[in-house]
Structure formats: C-alpha cells, structure tokens
Length: 84
Length: 233
Image (cartoon, rainbow over the protein chains, first blue to last red):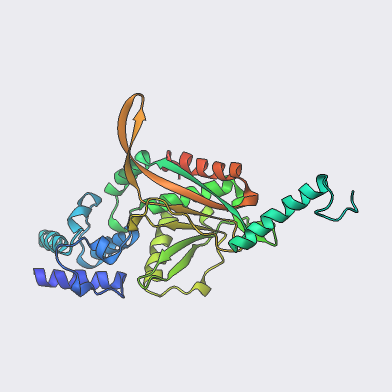
C-alpha cells in the first residue's frame, strides 16, 4: 500500500469517527486531537479501526507518532510495509 | 405561641419562619433548588503507570483509557454513598439499587447527549470500557437514540480532552448528583521533604443539599482510595 492509499484509509477511518468534520481539509502537521476534538476514547477508536482495517497494532508507546495526519501516514505506511 | 402570626411574634416562631422562608426565596431567585459543590485533587501516579503497563500487553481493541477507571471508581463511590444514586422528587430522595451511569458525550454539532451505561456497578472495568467505547462511537455518529437507553441514576462529565482543568457539573433533574473530571495534569507536590511531579485530576461533585457535605466528601474520598489501587477495580 503506498502513501496515498494509506492516507485515504486514514481519512476514511477518521471520517467514521467524526462524521460531521471536514477531515479532508486537515493539514498534515496539526494535532489531530485538537483539530478534530478527539478525546482519548475517539483516539482509541481510531487506533482500533487502524488495527481492524490495516492490521497494524499500534502500541500505546507509539501513540505520539499518530498525533498529526503526516505522522500517521509516515508511521502506518512503514508499519504496513513491515507487515507485508 | 402556636397561634401567633408569623413575622409578628419576636420569639422562636419568627426565627423558624424566617429560616423556612429564606432557603425558598434563595432557591426561587436562583431558579433551581440549592446544591453543594465539593472538589478533590486525586493523585493518578499509580493509575497512570498501571494503565500503561496493562495496555503495553494488550492489542488495541482490549486497551483501557483513564475514563473507564474513573467510571468504575464512581460506581464504588456510589456504593459507599447510595444517597447520591437516584432521584429527588418533591424534596424526597429515591435512591436506586442499580447504578445506571449517565455519561455526557459532546457531539460534533456541540449538542451533548447523555449516553447511559446500564448497571455499571456490576460490570468489570473491561466491560465498562467496551460499552463506553461503543456508546461514544454511536453518540458521535448519531446512531444513538436516547429512547434506547434506561434513565440514568447519576451522571459523569469528563471534559479533560478540551483542556478544562475542573468541571462543575450540572445536576440533571430529578437526579441527586453529578460528578465532573477535568484534564489530567502533571502537578508538583511535596513528598517526604522532596518535590515530586505526578499526574493529578480534579474531581468535582455537585449534589443536592440534602446529601450533605460529609457524605459528599466520603464519595470523593472513596474515588481517591480506589484509584490508588487500580488493580482492584
């Protein structure tokens, strides 16, 4: 899966969590939780959705790497490559 | 003296009359029955470490968040102070034997919805976590209908993610109480002469006056106590 495909999957999963938000307009470098008003449960729901969809289990110690959209794309592209 | 019109006798009857009158006029002026607020700072050092250790060994779908520990701690507090769990109708308390925990969930459009965890007192922390995650997901995506849920017996508000340090919750009539949890922040404190930093949350209880400050304080003390032994939740 290339970066663009991983990005599309991430945006789709975030949209499921906050249906009314304009997730496609979120810049790559801003804090996702602050921008989309995600609380710890929403964020965990995102991590679980990543687990179920991309089959990548992000350990809690790595949550910081998912704080921005850009960070999430980098991290999950790498993790998905390692997996396959 | 029993026949004296109120407000004329200079004896005990007047005092009693005034005492009866004042709370009523105050509550009229405030547009609500009077209630009390109590707040406590709770050290979460043990709870945070325990949670990190537990989650490190679990796949994402089985992990817990601090909010689940707060909710379980609240059920312990309500078991110790059952007067807080239930309704107040015409000044008379009706404690409930089960704990249906209402959780205020903000939706994207700003309109909050109270999701309810039925019988939360009997559920383990993993079960509470699963239900909470599901309820929040459904509430956020408008797939939760308030008519699907039992009436809550107590409510919890957790606004820490918005950066709020202390939440002063509103009591939803006819309920007797509500508790709010703020943001978990690192705070310095003195331990055996040394300054140490640990994560702390402010828990704020709102309760009907009839519950009394002592019971309210006991409720917060129980929450503090059980959060110091998270493995027992």
